Every structure is written in C-alpha cells, then in structure tokens.
Length: 432
Image (cartoon, rainbow, N blue to C red; front, side, top):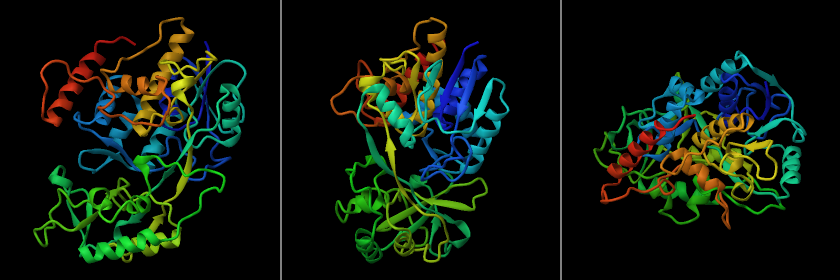
C-alpha cells in the first residue's frame, strides 16, 4: 500500500491524514513542533488555533456554515471534534481552543496507519506522494524548497492575533452579557463605551506604539485580519461599523444602544478565558495593556495572551495548482490549507479533505474528485485554482458560489439559505 507524506499537522494536514488513513493508506504525518516552534504557536498539539477560536457561522445563510455542513456529510474528523468542543458563541461554532487541539492530537496519535514524525521537513521529499499542508507559517527552509520546485517568487501577507483575558479579572459591574440581535443565549460579554470614552480610546489607539515589521518587506495585510489600530486609522467612525459596532445590542442598564461596544467571546470550555473579538493587533505588549485597559470593564484585566502579528506565506495556487490541488508541474505533489490561499479555518479543513481524496484518486488511476461551484467546497477550490492576474487569499463566501437561476429572491437570508439547500442536495448526489 502506498505511503503518503503529509507535511504539517495543522487543520488541513490533520483532516487529510484522517481521510487517507481511514481508507487504508499509510500516512507519515510530519510536524516540526515542539522541536522547532513558530513565532505564534504556543503548544505542540495538532490543529492549534492561532488567531481566533471561532470556525465561523453555523448558519446555512452563511457560506462558512454551508461548508461545515458539506464537510459533516463527508465525515470530516475536525468538524466533528469542533462540534464536540464547542463553547457558547451564538450562531458561531467557537471551540475550547486547548480541548479542540488535544482531541485531534489524541485521535490521530492512536489511529492505525498514521506515523507521527516530529521533525522539520526542510526539503520536499524526492519520492512518493506528498501533501504540503505546512500552512501560512511554513518554515523558511521548506518554503525555499517549494519556491525552487515551482519556480515562483515569494508570496505573503501579514496576519494578526487578538488578546485573551481572564473572566475573573473583568469588572462585571460595567459589562453585560448579550448576543447581537438576541440571536443566542447572551454568550458575549459587552463592554459599553460612551462617546467621550470612545474618543479617548480612539486617540490613544491610533497613536500607540507598534512592533516594526521586517524592514525589507512591504506591509501587505489580509483584510479580514486587519489590526484594530490599522482599521482605526481609516477614520474616527470606522471602528463603529466594525469591531466596536453597537448595532443589535441594547444595554440593559440604560435600555438604550451604546455609542460603541467591545465584545468578548468565550475561549475555553470552562468559561474562564475570553478573547477580544476583532481586536487583532500589532501594538507592543505594554501598549496593549495600557490602551485596552481603557475599555470599560477591562481596567484591571489580566492578559494571559497578548496579540501578535505574523507573516503568512501562500503560493500562487491560481497558477500552480489544478482543481485536484495537484501541482501542475509535478503529479506527486499536492497542496492544501492556508498555504493555498484558501483563507480561514474551515477552508483549511475543506481543502485538506479534498486533497486527500484526490491523492487516493491519483494513486488508484481514477478521475479527480471535482465539485462544482454549486457547493461551498467546490467554489473555494475553483477560486484558488482559476488563474488570475492578482491572486489573493479568500475564504468561503456567496460571491463565489453559483447564483440562483430563475426568479430572484430579494431577501438575502432567504436567498442564501436556498443556495445552501441546492448545494447540499448536490453534495448528497456525488460519489466519493
């Protein structure tokens, strides 16, 4: 039986390893941690979530929710573990960060057909089938090998991580629990701001000291993970329509809508840790403590993790990969995960699944497993593999899923839900 090398035990690599191993294929799963750590990972566990603990919406009116449902149908291990590890987060599938990673690690370590190899892969192997799932934090040496193999120059963007504080350090007299539009059970902690408090916070935020980026690199930042201080520089009101928007919230103490609101989301199963939603940042750590402590309720907050910014690497998939996620120039090599430009946790899981199935199809001399853009999975694969002049990462969205035919449905939620129903009917009609 063929042995497949999977490089990287992140979300894509773990999903792929599971899909390959359960079908009887031998897998060598390489993970360089803990021998060599990245600049943002903190554990040696597989599938560690670096940025947020949320895998996005669970609703079928959301393309991320649709992709999760498609993956549930295809027996995704990681979506199953995410469902088992979920914490209260309204309509989103947020997980206990530590518990999620630990369950993945334990499951794969005990799975037949998977050999775990804790060492850095510095060069692409010369033989056998290879799936590169090393993610956006691919080591410099491996990426040099990838560049040599593909003949492409470096592609990257900067990503940022939000801070985490302890629940017990939050002043409960100044905050309130509520989900936006009451869609949930009041899982979010809301820190209300008056206009004066927001003005003071805003002025300190835009003038706070940041960590410098590498002097020789251009500051290319992925829009969905834009640091909060960068968003603020776009204008005084920008945050009020972004991470500090008060829309959909009513302060129970005043029975009115606040001028601005900072939301915190549960980060662990026990509810002891909360992350600042939308507060990805590149501020220096003392500045984070100083500025974010200006938020009502967080004056004495204990920061157990500060936000950081890191360089994410991706390949020009639209030029290099075909729809089976196979390197056009080398049929032995496949790519999956965020290194392909499929942005976000659920896209990483989805591309890991699709690459694994296509490796099997390749080995068995069968036709590639290609889903069309009626599905969320098919649409993201189509996006990252269709050649384009200016390729940039993208996550699941209805803008790339096939539109409805016939009579227009004006209501967006109704329209998107109908698109999802068609997608799921299509998914159930295909054969692996």
